[in-house]
Length: 124
Image 1: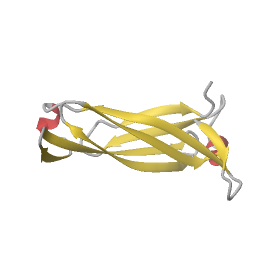
Image 2: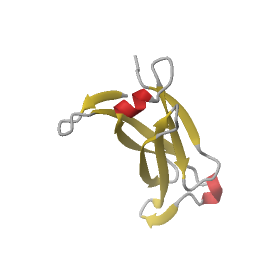
Image 3: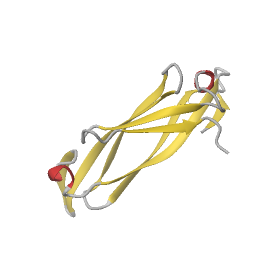
């Protein structure tokens, strides 16, 4: 995480950049991962992932983003994601020890594969 100042409003803005990597094989979910479409090399799949970022205390929503990842079933697929959020709100509700945020990653095509990560506001 890092923070900047929005040039038009003068408000502090946080930025979080990361990469989502999935490894879907044909045997996962009975070979039915997301939408399938035929291509020259075989079948292509598309996974839809919702990423939600909130505060540790008060459970305030900071931002959310829907990400689609396409690729063939046998290889790893990745997508770079950058999220911007209200730094002042995150910092005020981040909690003790420098504060932290909660990131939830929800796979729309596979039930029960949700993840929750705690991300510190100050890294380093």
